[in-house]
Image (cartoon, rainbow, N blue to C red; front, top):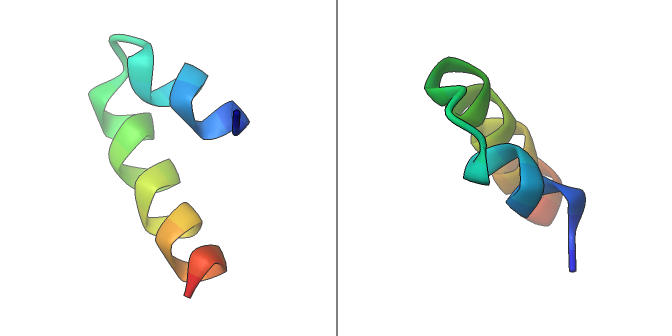
Length: 28
């Protein structure tokens, strides 16, 4: 399990979007 899931699960939508972008960039 990645720590990204925990952040995305949080009510922080702004941070979630930012983290999602970073995660996608890293996954790419």
